[in-house]
Amino acid sequence: QMWNYGPFGMTLLTTFNNGNATQSEGCVYDDENRTLFISEEQDRGILRAYKINNELDFSNPIIIDNRSGNIDDDPEGVTVYKSSEKDGYVIVSSQGDSSFNIYNRQEPYNYLGSFKVGSNKGIDNVNDTDGIDVINFNFGNKYPMGLFVLQDGTNDGKNKVKRQNFKYVSFADVLEKLDL
Image (cartoon, rainbow, N blue to C red; front, top):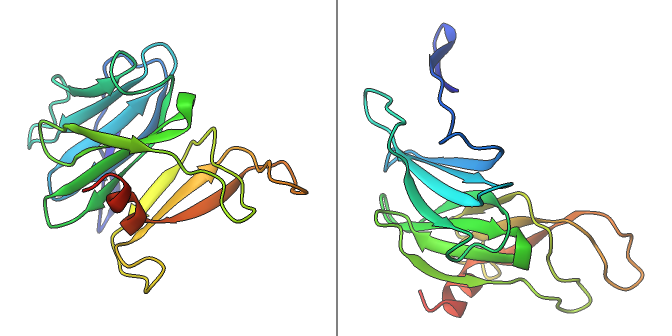
């Protein structure tokens, strides 16, 4: 469903079915490019983009990637990193191999690479990620190009409680790793 929040409350604008998806997992809306990104797990493992026009036509989604491409098992969380008003990156968690895929923010949404978050200084690696988010704000020396936050499905480091947690990653490190 797509809703509009106005001065008099919420108004339902339209309903759509995400290409008959069996289970939509994550979504993010890119305001400047008027694009809705949705990840679908289960049977197909697809990342789709919907260009939102004034008619709210959802009949022609763009398939960015799937299990036949660079997604291993289930695509989960999806977010947008803005390097300028319209440029930047779409990031999706690829749950099957605990990696994070990066694509151009604009069509044709080229795959640019992937990375994993390994163990470091007694902190365990990241696996089984569902939700992610990123912001391009400068948070000082540790996060000069922004902050990437990701949910970690288990906390399996030494003497640690085995439960989910969140990790923070400098987006400057991501950009450097992928030479972007």
